[in-house]
Length: 212
Image (cartoon, rainbow, N blue to C red; front, side, top):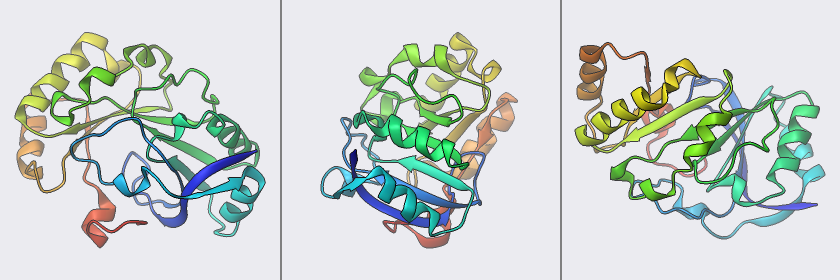
């Protein structure tokens, strides 16, 4: 069984509550969405078809506990579920970064799903699969990437409507070089919001560098 893999690399986790942890990233090729702020458009195409056993062997070379399966949109390849299960069976702590347009209910329950909810500013609002919110687990996380104050206010309404903070941690992230992080921090503090503001650590360290 093969998956189209764009890259497998070792770095610090730049996002989520695992930020800063040495992590192996398995980036799958392809994505059905085109967010205006996308920083991984290079993974829309290309890559190599790799056997799942070979993916596991490559991951093992780095000797770390944490693995993130990402994209593109990893769930766009249906056999991604086989890879997720295999990684969990091998004893890794696995997270999955998904754009929220594809059903997460088949994902192995041991996987921490990092679920994007696309804001109006992303250009992909129409593709949010709202039914995914019913499948969230306490080990999952919901992420809002915010393009503006309007996106922030919209996200507040969504949190209230779906009571997401009662299900799992929620992350607010400013679009790199577009939303002032200090302003976002002030909005969160003023509203006394039970969310975690995050910056993309990898971009602070290395800038907009592919494969980091």
